[in-house]
Image 1: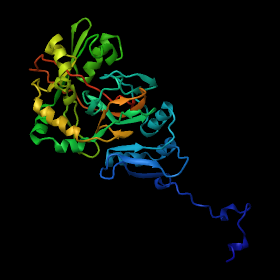
Image 2 (image 1 turned 180 degrees about the vertical axis):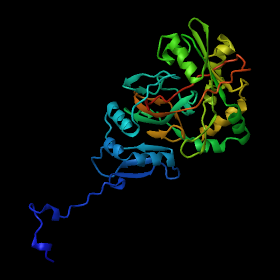
Image 3 (image 1 turned 90 degrees about the horizontal axis):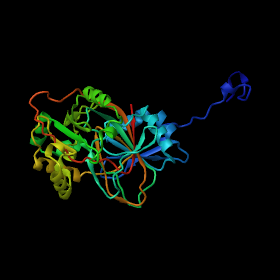
Image 4 (image 1 turned 45 degrees about the vertical axis):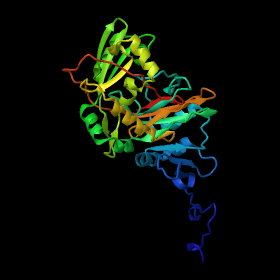
Length: 370
């Protein structure tokens, strides 16, 4: 067949050269599967070809990542070249934007770079129960990510569970009671016991602490010149902002003193008044949480676990299993904050304020994203 007008394609007629189509769809660069065939959580994403730069791919495929998180709850990115903490920071920023500072702290963490933190400084032989990040606060992250810089020699998994399934399996009467009453978290910040208030609020200024508490709807009281006590009432069940699904979203099982090993609990109660314990949890009206209800919730958690790098903080709970080997940084990132108004009832709340010891993920670093 002759070319129209007798022109031959070439350098002088580049418009006549048919360009080769390059497949830039997700399937060309990334392959997806599931970590465990019988479970949807987490979705596993791996490079389909060599040389895929995860940061560049993520920047151009944010909608794919968002829709996958909504559907599956978590994504495990595996076998991508993420050689450093700074590269992980670039990846998280590409997905979610600016990183948030870790404020109103619950566990000891070390800043690595920018707003990247170790997820906790607890000893490596301690396990951490499943929990939703910062559910004890009036605002919390919508996404959270982890990066393992140095694998553990043994153990050290970061199990996860689907809060939608957790909600479905909790006894209906317990769910309704928590939904109606909510949860009150009580904390005492005393030097030498848990975290001091200067670490929790990242300031040495009492007026700054008081401004933060008022803005967050947190009741506070200075028991002594350097002993701060706070009370915060939060939702126990939340509605997913995009899917409308109900989610079990609280840390009552973790804050309540019954979560502590018996010997630790007895030691604390022997040295502290009930109201001076480092942490505890009650129903939002100040009434005690039932031990059997908390054990029922913990038992459900114990039957749900997995592991991932990026997860929807609303939909998933994470924990940390004990580990041996190098005390390694694994990075956690938080994206966008979700807020609810002050829930603290201003009347008829008793001044009973016990606390239990909450924990966080050991094998990661933490960073927050707006």
